[in-house]
Length: 529
Image (cartoon, rainbow, N blue to C red; front, side, top):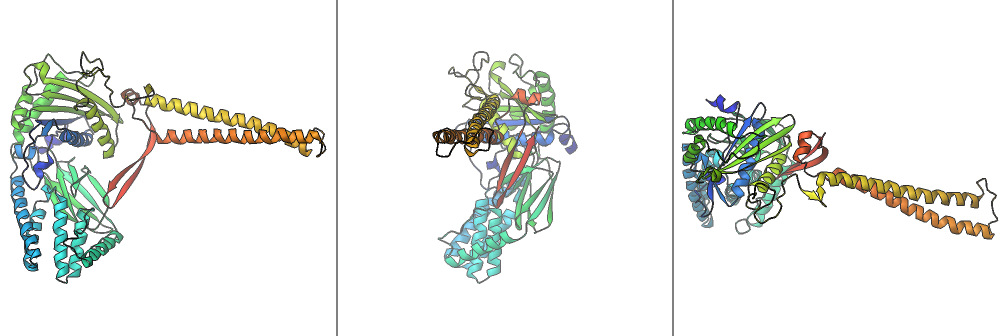
């Protein structure tokens, strides 16, 4: 049953991070329940589909019009229910520990906080509030410092920093000696050699979170990690989260091998989605890019909506075509009265394939905002490219620069800039060449007879030559600056390619991307051709 989910298609649903939080959160007053279903079609598309699903889910969660479906709750997850109870108990233990600390009952403080920490470690797959976790570790370090246990205190301070690089000692709880001890512990930790972590999962292509931060998709290897405990969470829609606290050692590769267990109602959910895959493939193709307004929506989508208590469904199809990712998304309003009302919109995008998550984040979020967000609005009057206010809608990749496509604008600026620069250097060279001729006559190193240095002819040659040399230098320098500046600007400026550019394979270029971490960053260079 698990293998069937891995091969052929990938399913992803909107999964609210609040469903994994330490306390149960209430639904917002505004907004309808929305589910995002993403499937990968064809060989090699599963990883791309997982990345698309993550960022599409993220942007839907940020849209105030929708409330994400908490899949881990809807499909049944006893481990989540146990984790939420443990987190509530941990909150109570932390409160009791703080009170004991204020009353200087250090042994009781340590006991309460260690019990709370054990609950976090036992439910590592559902920890999301790492600020609270780091504060717990910091308070433990403070207690050990007061008890004169310097090594243990430094260890706790380092652990707090490793899970939350932004943690700082609270002046109301930490005296100057503790703050200095914290600073030294962090300094020693950063001087230590870094380690790595190999992450795999069964089934593959699970989303990997390191200390609450999305890192990528399994299988993968994380490099440059600070020593100490790292909270690893791996999730895949339809399955229970897997989590562990992995100890990272310098110059060593640790391993996290996750076995993802299905949720209680996964089998029924799996069958419904298989039927939806077949039905949607018959109704919508990538080439059509239109909603089938006259056709009823598939019954399987209705049943999935009932199972998940969803009002809207974003059905997404991801496939690889050579070095290109082809994504088509159809929004279905399950509360619509007629087929026309239920088929909300279909939109598509094509972008260059890349394993860097930042590429997917940029493309998918911009695609959603330009097609499905409130700001984009619905295209009215037969899809004439105008919104309901009569303003032209601009698709991502079709932005204009001074009335022309940005890719064309870049070529025009390059041609005009380099051409103008070369022309200016040519004019400067002409002036400078003429000045050299006058100088050669003046100095007697040309075929012309040298005039007397005190003659009017010699003075005339100087009066002609010196201004020509100055003008020549000015024109040549300005031309060189224009040419070099244009070339540098062209190399650095990389406008988004249009869909036609990508489909024809005409987009290219090079650039850099930076992926920040709490203790540094990853600089990646790339060339597209």
